[in-house]
Image: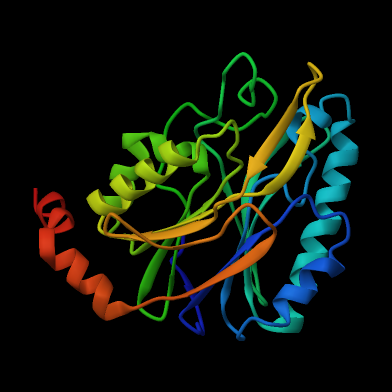
Length: 269
């Protein structure tokens, strides 16, 4: 794939912690407060129903809906001169895919999730048609000297993917997520470890709100959207809807990379 470079970047990453959004106009309230040419990240299952709620929906209907959402996000990106990173369910008449969209004023790009949850109570692997046969480097793009990668939250567990990002010399991982079941502490520790070993920023965006699962139980999404760098949490949200804006600091990032030189060691072997 040809290298993706965003023409302008404010150095601000805005993390939107939201429940499911039924009306896209609601997003504009936040976008109007963000500097132009910022990167805005939205959590999983915010623009779409939770996968268990759409099991019986016709795939063609889902595809038409996703096309409309992408077109609307493209219009919003142009209106506010911002870059939008948003998970979205898309596909065609016969297949359905779980992807992250990178929406820019000029062009859109997509990353399809490679490692899907396959637990008995949460089985996305059998629902989506994403290819999982051979892991590839996730979508990478550059902006103002920073190198970003898109990754779904669940994929952060897999060494094969995080090693590819280390070898790609990534500066920041944008991590839309849908975390629940009181897993706050475990996710914090995982994110701190990965940001330390990869010497990079990690921006985890979780959703809030709840969903009634097929067995009748209510699943609560606890938020706690956060930013980490070099093994430390640098800022975080609570369990309510909100927005967290982080200004990337190239000097601090360089100090983190140089202090332990994990990337340097892996790239020279």
